Amino acid sequence: MFDFVSFIPRAVMQGAPLLFGSTGETLTEKSGNLNLGIPGIMYMGAISGVIGAFFYESSLPSAEALVPALAVLIPFLSTLLGSLLMGLIYCFLTVTLRANQNVTGLALTTFGVGFGNFFGGSLVKLSGSDMPYLALSATSNCFRRALPFAENAGWFGRVFLSYGFLAYLGVAIALVAAHILRRTRVGLHLRAVGESPATADAAGINVGRYKYAATCIGSMVAGLGGLYYVMDYASGIWSNNGFGDRGWLSIALVIFTIWRPNIGVLASILFGGLYILHMYIPSGMNLAIKEIYKMLPYVVTIIVLVITSMRNKRENQPPASLGVAYFREER
Image 1 (tube, one colour):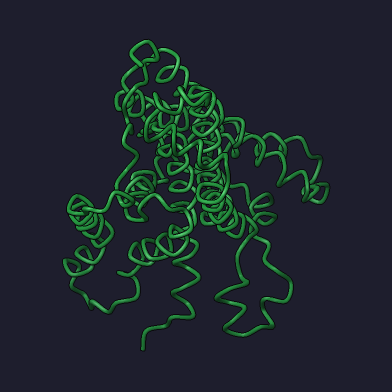
Image 2 (cartoon, helix red, strand yellow):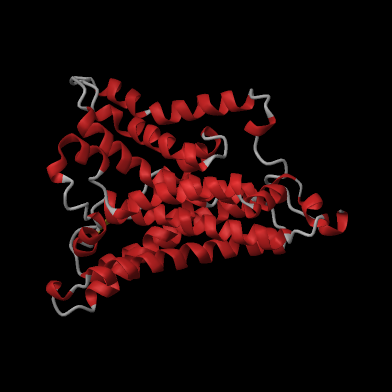
């Protein structure tokens, strides 16, 4: 029989980085900015957290001197700072200088991956490891610490209570973002900027400020996805190019969720489950069948894009000014 009790927690852990990335990109796109740099931003968030954790662990006289609060706070703040910097670069180029958003996003992805690989390799050499990876197990244990009573709650504890705090934070951020977008004046203004910046500007809304704020906050949220992957999912192991294509799947998830972060909670678990489904479906010794199962997330992504293009309802469409630079003098 299919082991759902084992499958669901792994699907949640696999989908949590996608949830952070899709929530951050949704906030960004609601302002009219199409940020294809999310994969690079998530990578930058991951390596920034690794740098903070590495230098904190290196400064300790012994492993027993590690303070759990600092072991969490330092990488957390480092990740926010690194991903915020990427968001500011994107905004400066696309909002202030009005550069092409697609080109800027792709450039940020290339830059983020290159930056991460360079400093990741450098940290591996500084650690003196003979292996091509860096292990931060002490910091990872602080991030992965589950609720104390989860083990005694049976299947309920394994399915709902066995995750580190970042997984719950991702769900909370997604739900808060959905509430802000749909139920608050700030969300209304943000959606107005994304739909028609000229109209929003005429109504007295500061278009540039909203674009900067949404993109930078979205970048920081996406960066936390990279931190989660390294510190929680990968157990504190950093290896160059180990992040995979989760950043691109996060962007596809935005379309799948119809630009609604609350739907992204379940959608990320679905995509995370598809990512590991090949490990749970018997395929015997036929490796070709297993490779076909590995294609499921990408096949579903293509199907979603086709279905999305056929939608006729306006509320299911992307913001009208998505990817278009705003020139106030043309208003």
